Image 1: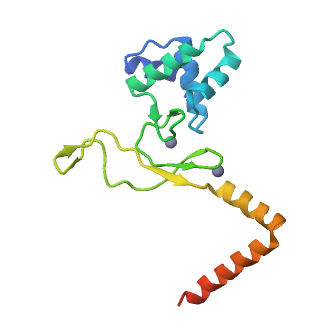
Image 2 (image 1 turned 90 degrees about the horizontal axis):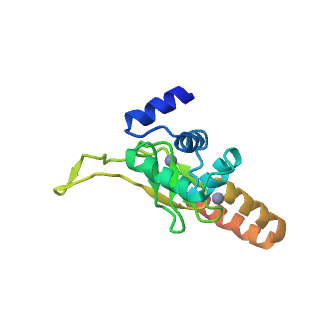
Length: 164
Ligand SMILES: [Zn+2]
Ligand SMILES: [Zn+2]
């Protein structure tokens, strides 16, 4: 999205396209890592050294309220921000803290009804260990404990044997 389109988008959402709002929106548009407010602030500060932290937090809040971005409250420590406002599930790695988009169909959408309740927001969160951390863990295990590795191999063998 270019500057003109971004500014039009903000106006349509009822927001005045200030430099700060444009900068934050552009950063989220280009970084799909679901950054925290602090991470957004650190990144925007590189381009706008005089920007105050409170300004970035206020901008995120305004963008969220206008529906330009989505706030994810999956991690207890800090909210994360998503440029993608469509309902989509997320996977949080408990080791590296990375938050991944997951392509998974969801049976409910905003506006749907269930047991007489009306759904307004759908947030599906999955927790675990991401593929990268699993790979790193396996590498460490192979390096340090060959015994542990043998046990894993045995367990795998048993599983395979049990499969018809
Ligand atoms: Zn991870
Ligand atoms: Zn996402």
